[in-house]
Length: 175
Image (cartoon, rainbow, N blue to C red; front, side, top):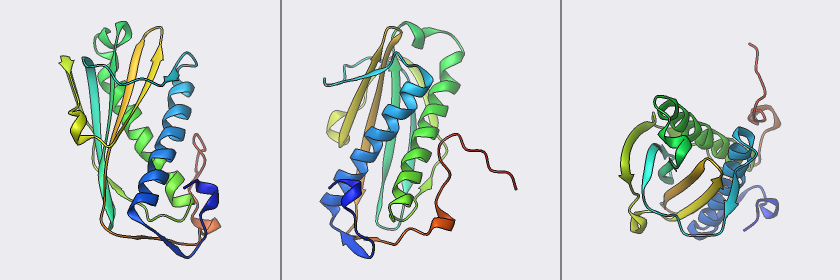
C-alpha cells in the first residue's frame, strides 16, 4: 500500500501497516544516510555479517511496536570514539523521521526508547528475528538497517491535523 493511497478515517489491516511502515523506513533511511554522506547508496543484497558498531531503538504504540537496529562496518566504523555516538544518533534520527512520516499520514505516534549502542568485532542481527533489512554502501563501509515490527490488530488512520503535523527534517522550532 502506497502512502499516497491512504484515505482518512479508515482502518489498515496489519499487512497493510507493515507494507506502509517498511516503505517509510526505506524512504527515511535513504534520505538520512545520503544527507550524512552522499556516497551512501542502497544495495539490493542481503546484509553481510560482521557489524562493528550498532545501535538499537525500540518503539511502541497502542497497536504496534518493534525495534530498529542500525549497524555499520568497514574502515570508517573502526575509527575510535567517533562512531559510537554517531551510530546512536543515526538510529535516533531514523526513528524520529519514520515516526514523523507516519504521523503525517494519520498513523498514531509511537513512544521511543533510549538507544543502546554496542561495539564488537563480529556483531550480527538474528535474521529470523528481523522482518526487513536494508543495506547501504559507501567507500568507507556499509550501513545496515534492520527492522522488527509486531502489529496487534487493525490500525485506524486518522485525518491528519495540519496544526499537529511534525516539522520537516532539519526545521528548527522556536518557542
